[in-house]
Length: 70
Ligand code: SF4
Image (cartoon, rainbow, N blue to C red):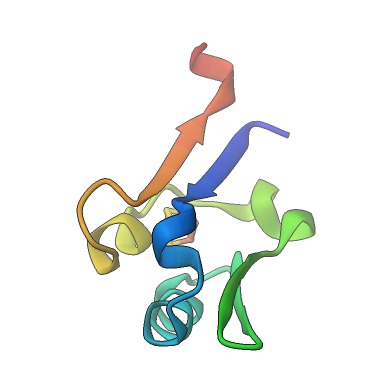
């Protein structure tokens, strides 16, 4: 696993954001479940670093972390 995605708890319960993230990610790393954002762990490896999720969310609330750069 080389990528981790973090969604700030203060926005993770926003149904509109959950839906938006599920829509923008081309590899289905986000799912909207019960009005919350769920990170689909098994898809994390598919991340193409397109940054669409980061742009779709309020500034600083979604972070895509490249673990291999640590
Ligand atoms: S950077 Fe792109 S591929 Fe990676 S989680 Fe965000 S939207 Fe999905």
